[in-house]
Length: 318
Image 1 (tube, helix red, strand yellow):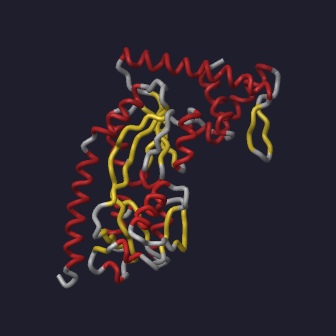
Image 2 (cartoon, rainbow, N blue to C red):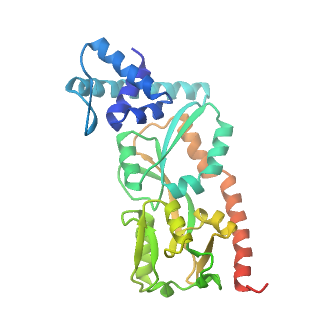
Image 3 (cartoon, one colour):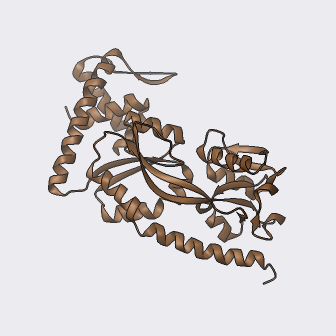
C-alpha cells in the first residue's frame, strides 16, 4: 500500500469531497476514485459512502482514517527531517487566504517564492476567515494569511504587513472631487460592504461607530471583487483595502477617497497551528513573506501613485 493513497483517503474523509482531495494531491478526480476502489478491494469492505449529505466514511473507513492519519503524519515528518539534512526544499504547501489578500497582496511574494523554489507545489485556496482557522486546526491547510488575526491559544501568529482602509466611490461621484472626506460625512450614505462576520467589515463598523456614524448598508457580499463591481455601477460607497482597488483607480472605474482623520490600518498576518512541525518549504515560504523586497517596493510605488492622484484630486483644473 502506498503512503500517497492513505493521504488521499485522509483528505477525502476530512473534506468530504473527492474533488478537493484530488486538488490537494495534484491528481485527477478519477485517480482518487481508483485509489479508494483499490483500498476497498484490498480490505474487501466499503470504506466510503456517498449520499445527499456528501461523502462520509463507513465505520471501517473511520477506523482506517484514524490509523492512516498517524501513519501519514509520521511519514511527512520523516520527509521533512530528511529534506532538512539534504537541504532540499520541495513538497507541497497548502495556503488558505481571503480574496482581498490572495488576489492583491500575495502575487509578488508567490512569484518570488516559486522562482526560488520551483520544486514546491503551492496550492492557494480562497476561504472565509473563520474557515481558515478551522482548516488549520484540522490539518487541512499548512498556513493561513488573514486580516485582523484573532488571538487563539492553538494558533501562532506572525505579522505580515499592513494595508490601509480607504473609501471608494463611483468614478463620477461628487465625493471624489477633493480626494478627502471626513468619516462623519458618511452619515446617511448608502454603503456596500462585506458580510457581517467578516473581520474587515467589523473593523469598518468600528471606525464608523467611533465617529458617530450609523452604517446604512444596502448590499453585503463575501468578497472584495463583488463589492467593487457594486460600487462601480453606483449602488453605494465602500470602505475597502487600498491595495484591492489600485487597479480600478488607475483605470478610472473607481475613485479612492482618503479619510481626513488619518490612516486606518488593516493588519495582515500569517497563521499556523501551534505545535505543528513546519516543513522546510513552509518555513521558506514564511521567510519570503516576511523578508521579501517585492512587497515594500510595491508599496513604495503605490505611495508614489497615491501622492500623484491626491495632488490631481485637490487641483481638478490642473
